[in-house]
Length: 214
Image 1 (spheres, rainbow, N blue to C red):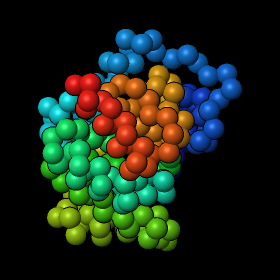
Image 2 (cartoon, helix red, strand yellow; image 1 turned 90 degrees about the vertical axis):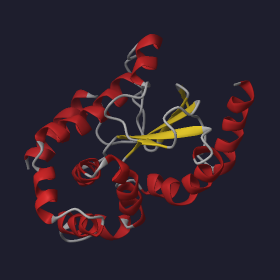
Image 3 (spheres, rainbow, N blue to C red; image 1 turned 90 degrees about the horizontal axis):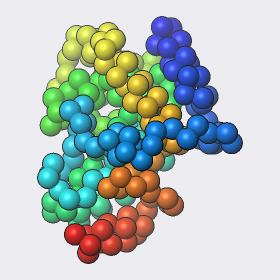
Image 4 (cartoon, rainbow, N blue to C red; image 1 turned 60 degrees about the vertical axis):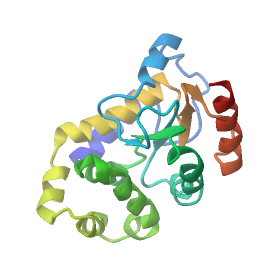
Protein backbone atom coordinates (compact mmCIF):
# COMPACT_ATOMS: atom_id res chain seq x y z
CA UNK A 1 0.00 0.00 0.00
CA UNK A 2 2.84 2.42 0.88
CA UNK A 3 4.52 1.71 -2.46
CA UNK A 4 1.34 2.50 -4.39
CA UNK A 5 0.75 5.73 -2.42
CA UNK A 6 4.26 6.98 -3.05
CA UNK A 7 4.06 5.93 -6.68
CA UNK A 8 0.94 8.04 -7.19
CA UNK A 9 2.52 10.98 -5.34
CA UNK A 10 5.59 10.90 -7.58
CA UNK A 11 3.52 10.57 -10.74
CA UNK A 12 1.42 13.56 -9.74
CA UNK A 13 4.57 15.54 -8.93
CA UNK A 14 5.84 14.75 -12.42
CA UNK A 15 2.57 15.96 -13.92
CA UNK A 16 1.58 12.54 -15.29
CA UNK A 17 -0.91 9.84 -14.41
CA UNK A 18 0.57 6.78 -16.10
CA UNK A 19 -0.54 7.98 -19.50
CA UNK A 20 1.54 7.68 -22.68
CA UNK A 21 0.19 11.01 -23.95
CA UNK A 22 2.37 14.11 -23.43
CA UNK A 23 0.96 17.09 -21.58
CA UNK A 24 -0.13 19.89 -23.91
CA UNK A 25 1.48 22.40 -21.55
CA UNK A 26 4.67 20.53 -20.75
CA UNK A 27 7.33 22.19 -18.63
CA UNK A 28 10.41 22.98 -20.75
CA UNK A 29 12.44 21.06 -18.14
CA UNK A 30 16.19 21.08 -17.93
CA UNK A 31 18.37 23.11 -20.25
CA UNK A 32 20.60 21.52 -22.91
CA UNK A 33 23.60 21.22 -20.61
CA UNK A 34 21.55 19.62 -17.85
CA UNK A 35 20.00 17.18 -20.31
CA UNK A 36 23.40 16.03 -21.51
CA UNK A 37 24.53 15.56 -17.92
CA UNK A 38 21.43 13.50 -17.15
CA UNK A 39 22.16 11.31 -20.16
CA UNK A 40 25.71 10.54 -19.11
CA UNK A 41 26.29 7.00 -17.86
CA UNK A 42 26.42 7.05 -14.06
CA UNK A 43 27.26 4.71 -11.20
CA UNK A 44 23.69 3.42 -10.91
CA UNK A 45 23.51 2.40 -14.56
CA UNK A 46 23.87 -1.18 -15.75
CA UNK A 47 25.73 -1.38 -19.06
CA UNK A 48 25.17 -4.01 -21.71
CA UNK A 49 28.29 -4.17 -23.86
CA UNK A 50 31.66 -2.46 -23.75
CA UNK A 51 31.54 0.57 -21.40
CA UNK A 52 33.93 2.34 -23.79
CA UNK A 53 31.78 1.80 -26.89
CA UNK A 54 31.47 5.10 -28.80
CA UNK A 55 27.68 4.91 -29.23
CA UNK A 56 25.46 4.97 -26.15
CA UNK A 57 21.82 3.86 -26.31
CA UNK A 58 19.79 4.74 -23.22
CA UNK A 59 16.40 3.09 -22.94
CA UNK A 60 13.73 4.15 -20.47
CA UNK A 61 11.52 1.12 -19.96
CA UNK A 62 8.97 -0.50 -17.69
CA UNK A 63 9.18 -4.23 -17.06
CA UNK A 64 5.38 -4.40 -17.38
CA UNK A 65 5.33 -2.64 -20.77
CA UNK A 66 4.44 -4.98 -23.69
CA UNK A 67 6.21 -2.72 -26.21
CA UNK A 68 9.37 -2.86 -24.09
CA UNK A 69 9.09 -6.65 -24.01
CA UNK A 70 8.77 -6.70 -27.80
CA UNK A 71 11.92 -4.62 -28.13
CA UNK A 72 13.80 -6.86 -25.70
CA UNK A 73 12.63 -10.09 -27.33
CA UNK A 74 12.63 -9.22 -31.04
CA UNK A 75 14.74 -6.11 -31.71
CA UNK A 76 17.56 -6.04 -29.18
CA UNK A 77 18.99 -9.49 -30.03
CA UNK A 78 19.61 -8.33 -33.61
CA UNK A 79 21.14 -5.04 -32.48
CA UNK A 80 23.27 -6.88 -29.97
CA UNK A 81 24.79 -9.14 -32.62
CA UNK A 82 25.80 -6.30 -34.94
CA UNK A 83 26.40 -3.36 -32.65
CA UNK A 84 26.77 -4.30 -28.99
CA UNK A 85 28.73 -7.54 -29.09
CA UNK A 86 31.12 -5.98 -31.61
CA UNK A 87 31.93 -3.07 -29.26
CA UNK A 88 30.39 -0.39 -31.48
CA UNK A 89 27.53 0.47 -29.14
CA UNK A 90 26.39 -0.07 -25.57
CA UNK A 91 22.92 -0.16 -24.05
CA UNK A 92 21.83 1.30 -20.72
CA UNK A 93 18.35 0.39 -19.48
CA UNK A 94 16.89 2.89 -17.03
CA UNK A 95 13.74 2.46 -14.98
CA UNK A 96 10.50 4.16 -15.96
CA UNK A 97 8.00 1.96 -14.07
CA UNK A 98 4.37 2.23 -15.11
CA UNK A 99 3.03 0.57 -11.98
CA UNK A 100 3.96 -1.02 -8.67
CA UNK A 101 4.52 -4.39 -10.30
CA UNK A 102 7.20 -2.86 -12.53
CA UNK A 103 8.83 -1.20 -9.52
CA UNK A 104 9.15 -4.55 -7.75
CA UNK A 105 10.48 -6.31 -10.84
CA UNK A 106 13.09 -3.58 -11.33
CA UNK A 107 14.11 -3.83 -7.68
CA UNK A 108 14.72 -7.56 -7.99
CA UNK A 109 16.75 -7.12 -11.18
CA UNK A 110 18.89 -4.45 -9.52
CA UNK A 111 19.44 -6.61 -6.44
CA UNK A 112 21.02 -9.28 -8.62
CA UNK A 113 24.79 -9.10 -9.21
CA UNK A 114 25.53 -6.47 -11.89
CA UNK A 115 26.52 -9.12 -14.44
CA UNK A 116 23.13 -10.81 -13.91
CA UNK A 117 21.03 -7.66 -14.33
CA UNK A 118 20.32 -8.08 -18.04
CA UNK A 119 19.65 -11.84 -17.80
CA UNK A 120 17.08 -11.05 -15.10
CA UNK A 121 15.56 -8.29 -17.24
CA UNK A 122 15.43 -10.60 -20.26
CA UNK A 123 13.69 -13.27 -18.19
CA UNK A 124 11.13 -10.82 -16.79
CA UNK A 125 10.36 -9.53 -20.28
CA UNK A 126 10.16 -13.02 -21.80
CA UNK A 127 7.79 -14.23 -19.07
CA UNK A 128 5.92 -10.94 -18.75
CA UNK A 129 2.46 -12.27 -19.77
CA UNK A 130 2.66 -14.91 -17.04
CA UNK A 131 3.90 -13.03 -13.99
CA UNK A 132 2.06 -9.76 -14.70
CA UNK A 133 -1.30 -11.55 -14.76
CA UNK A 134 -0.54 -14.03 -11.97
CA UNK A 135 -2.88 -13.91 -8.93
CA UNK A 136 0.23 -13.27 -6.80
CA UNK A 137 2.72 -11.49 -9.04
CA UNK A 138 5.32 -11.17 -6.28
CA UNK A 139 5.33 -14.93 -5.80
CA UNK A 140 5.67 -15.37 -9.57
CA UNK A 141 8.60 -12.92 -9.65
CA UNK A 142 10.19 -14.71 -6.73
CA UNK A 143 10.02 -18.03 -8.56
CA UNK A 144 11.73 -16.48 -11.59
CA UNK A 145 14.38 -14.91 -9.34
CA UNK A 146 15.04 -18.28 -7.70
CA UNK A 147 15.71 -19.75 -11.15
CA UNK A 148 18.31 -17.00 -11.54
CA UNK A 149 20.04 -17.90 -8.28
CA UNK A 150 18.36 -15.60 -5.74
CA UNK A 151 16.75 -17.10 -2.66
CA UNK A 152 13.31 -16.10 -1.42
CA UNK A 153 14.95 -14.49 1.61
CA UNK A 154 17.14 -12.39 -0.71
CA UNK A 155 14.10 -11.33 -2.73
CA UNK A 156 12.21 -10.38 0.43
CA UNK A 157 15.14 -8.28 1.68
CA UNK A 158 15.42 -6.66 -1.73
CA UNK A 159 11.75 -5.66 -1.82
CA UNK A 160 12.10 -4.14 1.65
CA UNK A 161 14.92 -1.84 0.46
CA UNK A 162 13.32 1.60 0.57
CA UNK A 163 16.44 3.32 -0.76
CA UNK A 164 16.40 1.19 -3.91
CA UNK A 165 12.66 1.69 -4.31
CA UNK A 166 13.09 5.46 -4.14
CA UNK A 167 15.96 5.31 -6.63
CA UNK A 168 13.74 3.55 -9.16
CA UNK A 169 10.82 5.92 -8.62
CA UNK A 170 13.16 8.90 -8.91
CA UNK A 171 14.44 7.57 -12.23
CA UNK A 172 10.93 7.97 -13.61
CA UNK A 173 10.44 11.37 -12.00
CA UNK A 174 13.63 12.81 -13.47
CA UNK A 175 13.01 11.32 -16.92
CA UNK A 176 9.48 12.70 -17.00
CA UNK A 177 10.26 16.19 -15.73
CA UNK A 178 13.64 16.84 -17.32
CA UNK A 179 13.87 14.57 -20.38
CA UNK A 180 10.26 14.72 -21.59
CA UNK A 181 9.84 10.96 -21.35
CA UNK A 182 6.13 10.19 -21.38
CA UNK A 183 5.92 6.68 -22.85
CA UNK A 184 7.82 3.44 -22.85
CA UNK A 185 10.11 2.51 -24.36
CA UNK A 186 11.84 5.85 -24.99
CA UNK A 187 15.39 5.90 -26.34
CA UNK A 188 18.23 8.40 -26.42
CA UNK A 189 21.18 7.72 -28.72
CA UNK A 190 24.34 9.67 -27.96
CA UNK A 191 22.24 12.22 -26.11
CA UNK A 192 19.56 12.71 -28.78
CA UNK A 193 16.00 11.45 -28.40
CA UNK A 194 15.15 8.70 -30.86
CA UNK A 195 12.04 9.51 -32.89
CA UNK A 196 10.08 6.83 -34.73
CA UNK A 197 9.36 3.14 -34.40
CA UNK A 198 12.18 1.28 -32.61
CA UNK A 199 12.69 -1.34 -35.29
CA UNK A 200 15.88 -3.15 -36.21
CA UNK A 201 15.96 -1.28 -39.52
CA UNK A 202 15.49 2.15 -37.95
CA UNK A 203 18.18 1.60 -35.34
CA UNK A 204 20.55 0.10 -37.88
CA UNK A 205 20.19 3.16 -40.11
CA UNK A 206 20.75 5.57 -37.21
CA UNK A 207 23.70 3.68 -35.76
CA UNK A 208 25.31 3.27 -39.18
CA UNK A 209 25.14 7.04 -39.67
CA UNK A 210 26.72 7.71 -36.28
CA UNK A 211 29.44 5.13 -36.87
CA UNK A 212 30.31 6.73 -40.21
CA UNK A 213 30.87 10.08 -38.50
CA UNK A 214 33.13 8.70 -35.76
